[in-house]
Length: 239
Ligand code: BJW
Image (cartoon, rainbow, N blue to C red):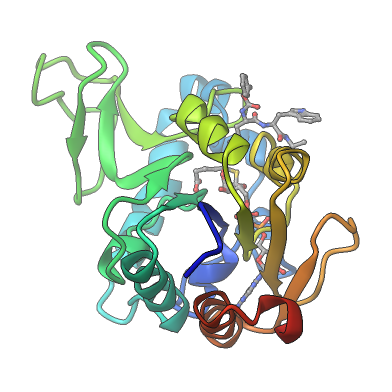
């Protein structure tokens, strides 16, 4: 396939049909919980128990038997196998890309199944609830363990690697993201400026006018169609 390097950015919408909440849809997390109570470093400093409760509930949900990767996650793994020059960047903290077969997705907003010590900085795999009393397995300090996620006001992970890939990509694909949170929301403009073709998969096409191609509908249907179009070289004709 001759499309050149591909960067794929995914957001909460790709995991919605797997049983995980999005953030900004009408029934999303931010309709029920205030961002400044659970998703900032200040919130964690003020009331760590509240923040732990929010992430503990989401971690338990992620580990529930019925939460599984869907056809969209699997289609991206298929694209990666056929086209190794692909960087999969996800804003999601779930592990559904890994479970769907993707080898090494870049989790720019962190991972819910990891915890980090605010004292020594150690990052460890974590599947249990976190509490104020949880001790760091490395330095044994209590009180500093937090979910390994990126809150508002914190710097997303591996931005240099992402920026380098965006600067060299021929195709940029955004899937299931509302494009409201920066810096991820600006990636499409960076890719466009680098000459990439830009592709969106979402329930509805975004109004911003920065995408060349649109695949509308639930990700479990639109993403396999998008991947087929990329692999068959029919993107221009297809959407
Ligand atoms: C479907 C579907 C289906 C549904 N099929 N589709 C003013 C202007 C500009 C920027 C700022 C500003 N003030 C502050 C900022 C910066 C701030 C920011 O962007 N704020 C905006 C709200 C204005 N950003 C930050 O603070 C970031 N850090 C930063 O900027 O550092 C400074 C810096 C950067 C670079 C260099 C140097 C310095 C950090 C942002 C951290 C975001 N964290 C969260 C929580 C992570 C942990 C957790 O999971 O709890 O990340 S917030 C939340 O939003 C989460 C998500 O990853 C992120 C994006 O959400 P996403 O994925 O787009 O989900 P939704 O719900 O918004 O959209 C779902 C979409 O799916 C919709 O479009 C649906 O239609 C669609 N959909 N079902 C297909 N079945």
